[in-house]
Amino acid sequence: MHDNNDMIKILSEAEELINQHNYHKAIELLEKNLSYFENEEMFLNFLVRLHLYVGDTQSALNYLNRSLEIEQENLTTLDLSGDVFAKLKDWDQAILSWKKVSELDEKRYHVWKKIGNLYYEIGEYHEAVQAFNNFLEYEEDIELYSFLASIFKKMGNEIESWNNLMKAEKLDSDNEKILIQIGETYFDLDNHERAKDYYKKATEVNPDSIPAWFQLGKSLEATQDFIQAVESFSKVIELDPDNVLGFFNLAKIYAALANIEEATRYYEECLSRDPAFLEATLALASLSWASKNYDKAIAYLNDSLRYNENENRIFQMLGDIYEDNGEEEKALEFWEKATELEE
Image (cartoon, rainbow, N blue to C red; front, side, top):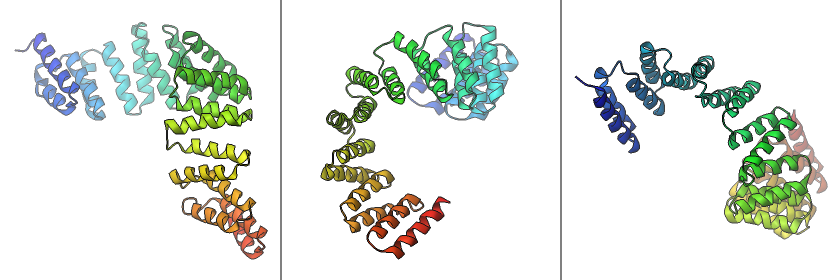
């Protein structure tokens, strides 16, 4: 005869195994003792969670059904039911289960976040917004305001996107993610001065924030403050020596400053890390072409064809370079290929 204390002891042993990442041993332990506690929802639900965690959704469903047979309106079981059906991609049943939890106990409002995430995953943005707002009626959440701002932006509703960012900033004016997000909104509105203010503040909040330094560099570049932009992108590379876009943007700035040597160096650094980076190749070829170094320009483009064999822009530029070099037959050959690929 096993009582409730025995069950708690076994579940505690299973927790210890889980803490040691011995998930399958924990399952073995529970299933070995299942016959003693097959009518205990807590025991069955523990098995549901474990099987979900290890990716055995079918076993999780089997134990879930056994638990539901004991009591159909147990809140914990219904919550787990939503998790299981979401994994099975049975969206309607998952949402139905979670909504039932909220109907039975409005204090379990956390399910609205699960419902919102699921609606978002399947592209039902309006329903996702409603679900998240249901959650926010009970608890303010900076991350959720940030997410809602992104959803509204995706939906083309800039006003609501902005409103949610302002709510987030009001909760925490030093939140790095929110500062960057507000900066991006100003950047999209071509208000680069305000964007810079927010990006600078984000770098002060977190001096190691690569996104903040990168976006600051973009804003400085947009206002033609090239010296400080170089400093920002250099900081990106200092923090991440393999940041391809950091090298690329540095190269662009040096090209704008007519410092061809530095531009070439940084474009080549970019390609050494990502040989398939087409924009860097086209820029390098353009620099060589502009200085009448046709062979070098052609070599850059031919090298890129190993990674971008169906890119019409490469063939178009090859045709243009051969024409400029007086080789019209070759130019025509490459232009025809470019046209074929474009079509």
